[in-house]
Length: 260
Length: 260
Image (cartoon, rainbow over all chains, first blue to last red; front, side):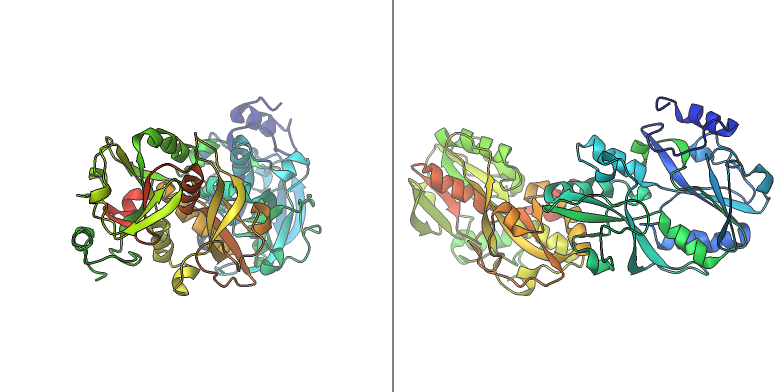
C-alpha cells in the first residue's frame, strides 16, 4: 500500500477503498490539512492564515467559490479525495463522512494547509530521530498561552506540536525546518514549556505523550490544530475539514516545498 | 574614528597610529583572526581548520609561503596591517609587537580565520540583543569537553563563546548564523552548559561573564580561541597571531560572507 503513487492512492480514496489515516502513504509527497468554508467566511479565514503563517501555512486554495479542484496540488476532486471528512455546524461536530458530494455547495471555498508530515520526512532523511515516529504514536500537541493574531471571527490560542531533541540535533532541526515555511517552518519555541503556558509535557491536549530524555530539549512547532480551534470558536454555520490524520495526499513533492 | 573605511583604518595601523582593539571599527566589514606559521607546519594547520570548520573557519590564506598579501581581503601587507601581534616560540608567548617586518621569513604562511564580530553585526541588525555588546564587555568563552578533530600536532578541546537569548530569539539566532558558515556558523550547543563540560557560566575561561536571564537559554558558538589553544599545545618553533581583539580589518563586506 505504501508504494502507491499519490494519484493511485487518491483513486482508491475516491472509490471509497481507503478511508483511514494517510500517515506513511505516498512517501515523499506533501499531505495537506483541509478547511472548507462558505464564501462569506472565507475572506476572514484567509486573513487569519496570512496573519498566523506558522500554525496556518496556506499551501493552496480554490480559485473560485464552488471550485472542487486544486490544480497546483494534482488532479483533485476535493469532494471525494480526502479519506474522511468532519462536518461542523455552528462550531459543533455534526457528522463524519467519506464523501461530501451531497453536501457540496457553489459557495464553498477550499483551503489546503501544510502538514508536519513533510518536515518530519526531511528530519528523518537527515538522520534525526523523530520521537513520535520512533514510538509509533501521534505527535503530542498542546494549547499554549500564545494568542493568534485575530481576523474577523477567527481567534484563539496557538496550538503547538512537540518533538524532543538533543541540543545539536535541535539546532539542526531548526535549520532543516527553516527551509520549509509552508509546512510550519522553524519551531516557535524551545526549552522550558512553562514559558508558553504548558504545564506538563506528559499530558498533551491532543495526540499522545512521548518520552523526553534528561539531556533533551523539547521543540515546539505551530500546529495545524490551531485553525481547527479557531474555527470551533468562530462557529461558522458550516465548515468541513479532514478527519485527524486523514489528509489530502497531493502530487507535490515535499522537496518542492523547500524555499532553498 | 569609527567612520574610517577599512583601507583608511589599515593605513593608520600600518603607520603605527592605531595599535588597539578593532571592535566597533569599520562597521559592516569582516575582521579576521590571523595565524602565521612556518610552511612545514602549515599543511597540518590547514587540515586542522578543514576538519574543525565551526571553531576554525578559514576565510583566506596566503597563496605561497612568504607571500605577505591577502588580495581576496583587500590591499594588505600582513607584516604591518594588524594593530598588535603576539609572537609564540615553542608554544610560549615570547613577545607582543606592532609590526612583524623584522620577523618575516620567506617560509611563513598566513591564515585568516572568520571572527564572531561579523555574525554579531548580523544579529544586531536583525534587532536581537547581543549581551556582551549591550553590557560592553568581551564575550565569555569556555573550554568544553568536546575534542577537536586532530590533524598532525594540532589537537585539543573546542573553545566556545556564549550569548544568551530568549527561546524565540535563540531560534532566530540559529537561522541568522547558519547563513554565515565562514564566521563560525550556527551554534554548536544550546541549553544546559554541563552537557558540554561547562560547570559555571559565571566563570568563563576567557573574556568576561555576562548576565543570563531566568527565561533565557545560553547559546554556544565555536570560537577562534580554539586554534590558539591547539597552537599552544602543538608548540611550533614560531607562530605569530593577532593580539586578542586586535584583528585584521578587511575590505570584505560582512554581507558577502552570507551563503545566501
